[in-house]
Image 1 (cartoon, rainbow, N blue to C red):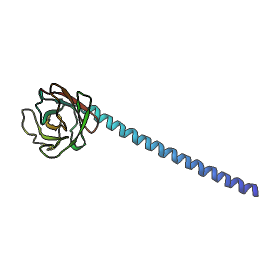
Image 2 (image 1 turned 135 degrees about the vertical axis):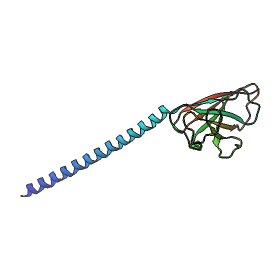
Image 3 (image 1 turned 180 degrees about the horizontal axis):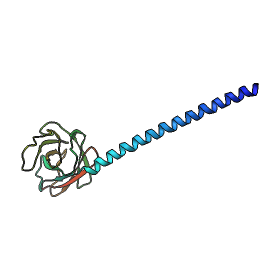
Image 4 (image 1 turned 45 degrees about the horizontal axis):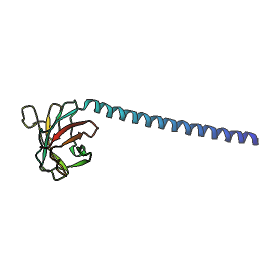
Length: 170
């Protein structure tokens, strides 16, 4: 009788521990599947996102104005989450923060407006850069670009798609 009781308790422990391991395995597989799906969504968004920047030919001090066109298939927004970096020819680089005002302060950038072909302001989806539209961006460097030198302006969307343009100082 005593061995039957010990055997039943042992079998119950084996069943409970097997059930615990099985549930843990299923939870892990579910988390892995969710992470994989999220990665696929981000990857799909990156593949369909494309921007192009055209910088000014000359920089004469002050604010740099750049046109950024959405040539991808995804509408873009959340400009405060975009990254703008100005790299000087000397090798130093400055991360510029977003400003919601129309004139950015030193070390800041702002989006001035969104336009359609022909220069007319975008009428649909205000504040969203839809495919085929372009926006004007003003960049106010924290320090001026030295004379007779170049700087590289890199603009990045929140999902990591970048474009670059070169600015020359006269």
